Length: 344
Image 1: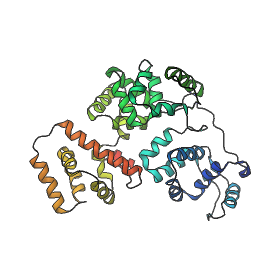
Image 2: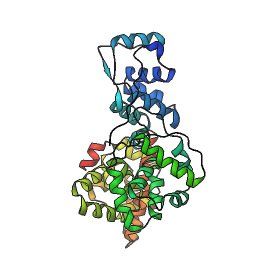
Image 3: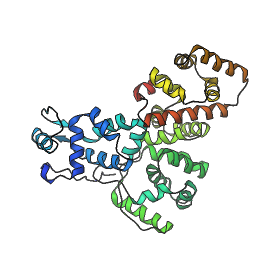
Image 4: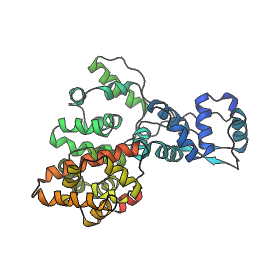
């Protein structure tokens, strides 16, 4: 499907809005400084700034000088051109709010348009309400809608849907291409009529492997595995691509020692013991190296005393720990190297 044409940011600084100037300034100062500013912005402001960043492919030397005159308090030694665009927005967002929240924010950002308002009403609904609206829709349409809802709500929605429809929806979500604005507006119009809402404005949408991986991460592990196996059978390359983007319990090993220490301070000892019941010795050693010898002995004792534990209980404990990881990453307390996680 063709991409929606985006409206570029004016090259004349005098014609730029305050938001466009801020986005350009954050590109000029670099990801580290930009991250410090973006940490103080709310979700809506982050989306708006990220949208403007994606509209700025580069900033000329002359444009830099004009912007810096407007922001005289900023000291920066400009040189030639500085690249902006989606990649820059991704880097700055990841440094300010973590890759998990960054992925969610960028998934709601379309090059050329502001965040959709019409879909916000759906995002605010309970999963059961959304299900009642979309249960008769085609998998492609449901995938498009899920791309707006975030992994947790999409996972809850998927559970309500018939088992036979789940795998096609995940597959279409992972391969969802940029959607023409006219198509999105039509979908929003139909859903608004069903829900008795007034249409606001539309937006093109891109799904992708990362969004599908986030959704599978948020699902019950058994269901997640079943869906991946089903996808593998139909499209092995797509299944492998989704799997590579998922964060698993064993991926904790890629977090540095300081990050693991922060994580362990927020985890219940019982949860840790249950979660480690099936963990590799390598991961156990990495986690035990971050706590006192006595604390490690206590966890080991609890593991040995608990006897056999149902696989579902182990998976549930691991998922609770992964949720803490996601929260700490979104708060900027820990960092996850996605490349190392994929290799772990």
